[in-house]
Image 1 (cartoon, one colour):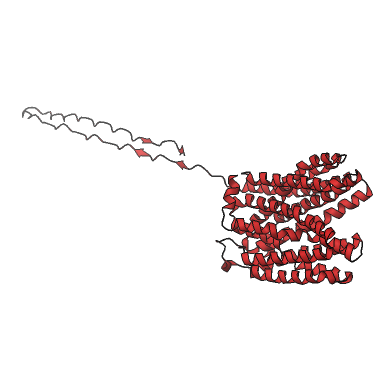
Image 2 (cartoon, one colour):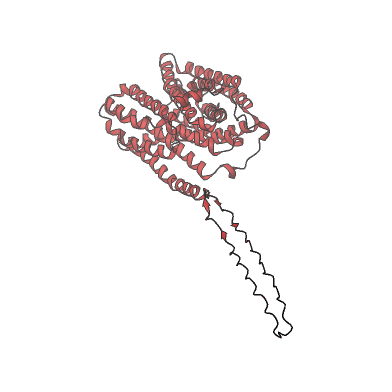
Length: 456
């Protein structure tokens, strides 16, 4: 619990996470609400409803990075004003629009959608220092899980109990309220040591690196697997005559994700998003084997479910560390686009596979695609780690040489014995012999003692 206590003690983070839960609930209800409106109010089929949802998804995928770039350059509040006004216009007019007008309007609404998901993640990176981001992003993933548990369920209940048209107005009011709340909260998008005066335009080649692209691919693969799993669960239960248990099974899956996210945030060492998505995909492939009974399907979903929130949290955390603060908004927008595209691809892909074969194959194919993405990214990740290991400088132990102390040479002075000449008799023609000199003592040889090098 200590990592979470430390993260929640950071100024501003607690209120940001609380607002994120409430603000995301209406956003998670948009897809279901649009579907009910097109089918029930406009009398169109599910294919037509899917086209409206696809138009909104494509718009959101394109708009995410653009809005993130605006946040980086102009600040958060101008972007919130722009997107909140756009949301108010769309949701207040959508219930009255004919289908041919609703389709392009949905694309524009997606393009200018309130960037709650990316803004929350960008603000977490600004509020939490790197050592606290893992639990902070884990809390964010868990709050997102709660929003997805509540939002669609409320939309279904209101659409069936009241009307889809009223639900459209309610969802729009919730989104506008979320935009106003975020404008009032005005969470920081840059850390305190990253002042606005340092904003500069960073070329894409400096931050859109191969590793960042790999993390975005992992993010896309993660939500592709999750979107495919969502559809496959419904198909398996329907084939087994237990479709009434769908809510229970999906709730068990979400609870497993919450537990996994909580455990991920408490670990002290980072976990690679590549490893997480590989294990998530591997655990998803055999889930269909539990389709005989709803409770078996719940148990089969637990291992994969426990990796949902951790994988999404790990990708967001990694993106926040890979890019400079000047482009963090745009990078988080790209991350949000990858997540959106993954969900948009996973559901129809699993549906097509199920229609062509059998419900369990929806798990198999989406899980296999996740594994293929992980395998495609793995060589680049291994090369990066090898390069980083080789580039790590080796710290050599300094060698301290013992100074050479020369022994001084002390010369013994030569003492000559004085010559005493004996007086020779005059008759003695032989001169006196000279006295034999005393030889000088030999000087000792100079010695040099150099100690061996000492390796400290």
